Length: 244
Ligand code: MN
Image 1 (cartoon, rainbow, N blue to C red):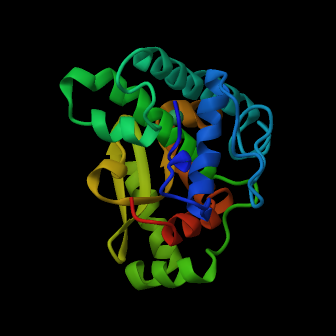
Image 2 (image 1 turned 180 degrees about the vertical axis):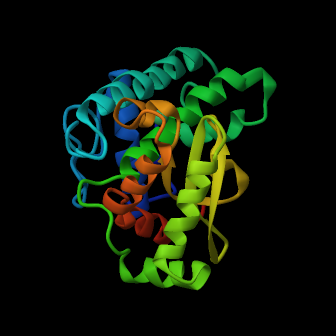
């Protein structure tokens, strides 16, 4: 599998490319391929687990035990399944994003889509959280949030409602839709990436994301994530980056 950063029509590694590359390292770590994003100057160097922080860095909101299962079993499981599924096919050399785009709404590629999109979503999710998260967005993002939602609190309320209200398994997202920011939710493996939207950050509300720590209290988990872990810097970088 190769990544878009290798494309010859992109001479320089932009901030956004770096973030996508950094997000992809967990797939590469999981599949045993060499890492390539370590040298980037502004890289939040991933530790050996392939996460952008240690397993216990999100405590007490997300326990190390939850991360061990969520990253170590669920996320790696999707990445390993995908690797087997695309081996020897015309998708073997495609980027993860390309595989997601080329398998969505294709009944013959449903299993590929589920594993590819779940891998992409989880790469994005780990970067949407930070041990130093919560608080206020950087100025440019804050201005955009206030223009679309009225206030940061109103944005967080809408994101919480979308995440909490997502029936069964899925994701809550802050996205850019042209010049406007909005909140959407997706079911199962689905991702706004294939809906013409630019994902800025996500909250995973599959039960495996919180059940060991919060059992059925999804709302408490989501609120704690938004108050203490949400990575506005990552969202700001995505907003500033190129269009999807
Ligand atoms: Mn998950």
